[in-house]
Length: 398
Image (cartoon, rainbow, N blue to C red; front, side):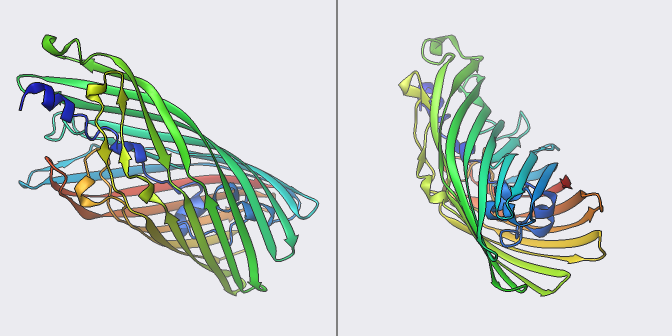
């Protein structure tokens, strides 16, 4: 194999991170409940979880602001037995929500949060450095919503999303006799919409809720920066513009909630993510010889969320949650810049509210990544790991 072909093939997995991870850590309450909130959510965070819930508390103002600290620990075990782990890092996606209800049946709300995001940082000298050193995707959403209650037991919500995404990737390049590196950076805008409903099917006992978030197309544009490129490749492999299209998937959730007693709520949510839209990804370089499409062939997934909360006192609520979240990535396309795996999540938390309307929610979640074997050409092995999430949300209702 000549060195030109080696360089061209080294770009094959550059865009794997672009699909990103779907995040649902937009409130400490949701983290503790495993995301099983679509039937019951009734504060300003409903702008994300189910906009119909914005009109659930009667007239007044509600605000929620917080952060979720996500600390992953990822491992790769090569087929030859060698293991590599990512260094300690913390990702801090923020969330901010505000809503106002008036006329007893109409509400408006606004959310700011990160619906998709991921960050991977492998050691700079590890054996997979020609596939990935670092990769990160961050998306920020601004999400206005309106909700209406046409019947005392029915609520409807509708909104639109404006997304800003940034993408960064670094990796080593193998020139056979030497090593170089490439850094890619880009940004994009996208627009989508969301809708939801809530209904009290059996008064004070059985509740249902559902939401839909549309897919969002984003076209990233940016630059590629190369370092330590041998002179004989300088005319073809040099700093240049890049672009690439990403389709963030449709997401639909249906939830059931019950209140067997006044102080106890139990919920079950199913979330469908249309990952099958990712058939192929590619980064377009100004030099077309460096543009190589990447087949992904992801498949749709349905995650299961179970949660419950008990009002211990007038001011204190205890919460538990459990999630099974399948990976969309088949083994043949699993690469180190998106080391995904099926996730099992266990959550717990507590909420406190003062008579003044001030509230504090704390949620913790332990995430286990079930070992996922990769048979991707050129770099097979098994991905596994854990993650811990600590979320804190401050709230105020007037």
